[in-house]
Length: 204
View 1 (cartoon, rainbow, N blue to C red):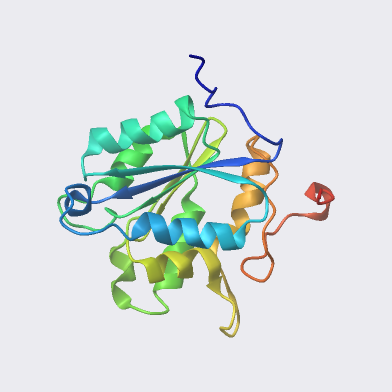
View 2: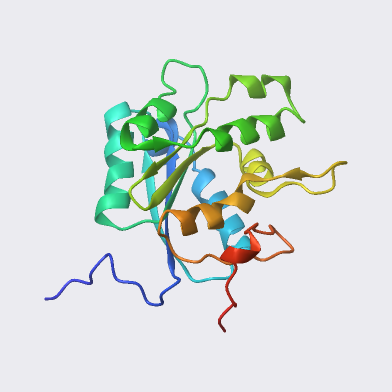
């Protein structure tokens, strides 16, 4: 029996996205994970180009996190990997270290902006240690653990004065620059920014 090629794309701009929820208790079935459903729901509303998801629910173990991120990028061809959970100062929160180990280049602006957004709500946002890295032609970003915070950091605070940009507005152009698919967003949810020279006609 011939197995499908995991690197195959059904359309040129199909984006492969890895969703990784990192939690000891959720991975053991103590409670139901809310991170992956929240990520998936937001992305399906925000992105209009075709998406394929690869989901993983894993414990807070450094080597396991790193190997999962590498598998999603190197073996399954994910263009974008979003993690949720394990980014605080607790001893078991090792997601940032594991992510840095999987990456080849750090993208510090993503973590800086996420903390800036969260500081609009709680002073403890400074305790968050989210990082973002590039591995090959993929972008890997750590997100907060709470569904509300996930949406806020991705989407930003458009009603604030002045408006605060969410991090996802920069993701499509970043993917362009590292050789990924041309991702188009739903402007009513999140308007992606590209310089005019990088914009392409949207194909039906």
